[in-house]
Length: 289
Ligand SMILES: NC(=O)c1ccc[n+]([C@@H]2O[C@H](COP(=O)([O-])OP(=O)(O)OC[C@H]3O[C@@H](n4cnc5c(N)ncnc54)[C@H](OP(=O)(O)O)[C@@H]3O)[C@@H](O)[C@H]2O)c1
Image (spheres, rainbow, N blue to C red):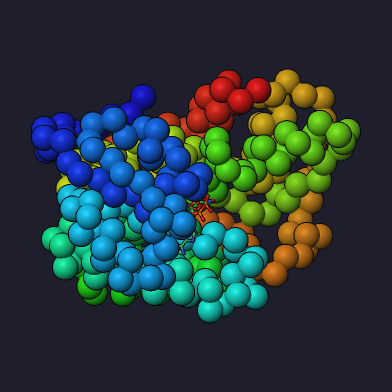
């Protein structure tokens, strides 16, 4: 299912994953078979603590650090701006400095929210950043600072993550559908759902290739949340009816982008093709329902 150019690395590498207890982190821990992997959650590796981060990197002596740790509550970031920047930006800078000091490569996981969502065609990796939310601003600022500290850094932007072991949209829809005959879901926000396992496999390949620069990595294709919900309900064989609604009926602290599809060009240029999101959803539902 994944096409990939031959790995440049035949020898196992030492990999340190920060954010290993999150949705993506768990998938990385499960999917990464080729190398020697050590993972940390916030209890063992709070990235806001510069000394602790340095010690952790010194102890694990990684070839690569994968930074999947983040404060990901997009609405929470609007009211906790300091926390958002402390974790997502200053924390990331601590990790980049430790990587530089110890000669480790860094892969930083970033987001479609660095864009404003006003385009109607897929965002290219070199489109200008224009975040509209505190979460997006904190990640965009981190991208800039990390590229200054470590020009060889690999920045992987992704979107609409789902998978086992964390809060995700398919689980929410299935939970609601279990108790309601009708659901209302917004149809005016479009993006690319991304299965954490597929993203994890793409990240493994990027590290083994020694990738640098900005890479957009999502499952292929796009949909609205409404279309995504309908596919989840149909895939699970449920009878719940999904009605399409608009974002103005669901006002939230952080304004969601109307369009945040990321172009697959940068990933495909590296010989990696992620499957279509419908295929990814089928595989996820097959293991959970
Ligand atoms: N979820 C999405 O839809 C989405 C979309 C685009 C991009 N992303 C990006 O993808 C990455 C992974 O997201 P996710 O959904 O897997 O996140 P998640 O499930 O919310 O997990 C967040 C991870 O970050 C860790 N963490 C939080 N604060 C920390 C701190 N101060 N120090 C160290 N670790 C800390 C958490 O550790 P504990 O659990 O141990 O506290 C957890 O392991 C993030 O960089 C996120 O910005 C996510």
